[in-house]
Image (cartoon, rainbow, N blue to C red; front, side, top):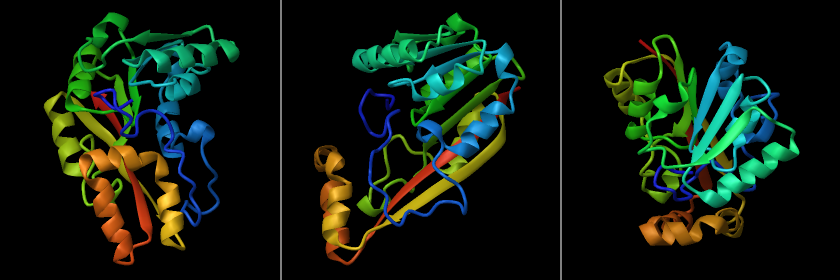
Length: 240
């Protein structure tokens, strides 16, 4: 979930149909719709020796992907219904080393779990990074995927949870991290008609109406635009 508990993008897939989407040549969708580049960064760490903390876990997408490889995994999210679903999925998969907890990831201190890795998928804020910095020992890793400021650029308004590259580097440096990887993954969905473009974002209409993005997106389509951009930062940073 997004840090304030909204479904800005949260820890669930957007669920948008993606005709004509641009992927890297020969690359299929990652398991559980998790970025392959992000998974490679995680698997470069000695996961079998680590307790991983998945902040903003939602229904446990990242925690469930990590559990078969880690010593233990703890997923935290403020949405109790999402945590209940994550627990059900973990039980169904027979995963005994993953625990899901209801809590506010911007208020809890992560030191309780003594994590060797803090991860997050589309749930990021300065408060989360600060808490990770206090909880991780030197040499341990914070790795996450966050919204980039180009996310849904066609609506004319960046997500309030989005970062650009310079802003992310600055907050990581301030909180005691050295960046080892910071890249932008961008996918542009192109539609053949206004109807197709509207159908693709039907699940976002209510939220976009409330913050003004819907009307900007309609104007963009009326002016001939036919794209929708998904853009994320993929980050791995080590505690100094």
